[in-house]
Length: 173
Image (cartoon, rainbow, N blue to C red; front, top):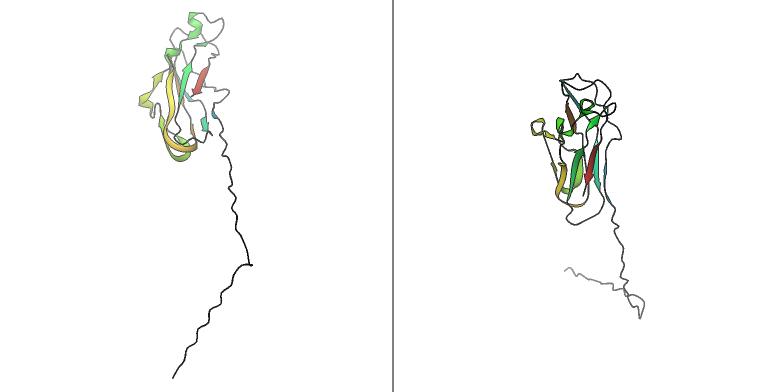
């Protein structure tokens, strides 16, 4: 005959122990929405009556606002390009400058949906007016995206030789 014996050990805290809880709090800080574009973009050289096509360099939107459902829209605009004393023949109007954003490079963000303004060269728009460049339509928390837009300058046949300068402005809201 086999006899089994079981023993239980019960331990208790010190006599009279009392628990207490502490409500703890912290804050997740919100940053800013910002855009960074190249300071300069040398596009190269072209002949009067031809075109000059080149990428501008990376444009980056960084959204550190830590929002539940962030959205933003980046736009692009341009002034005229001039040389010399900016006479008519020394000016290439902004409606002769094409822009296409191209695809997203290194997109980041939880559930982020980025939409390029002009995903392909076939979607090129002139910079005669402010145009969409990129947008965020969905996501959660912080996000960022980079793109490398292409400019296409249609140089008029009557354009005067010289170094032309103009300003392309990217904005985000």
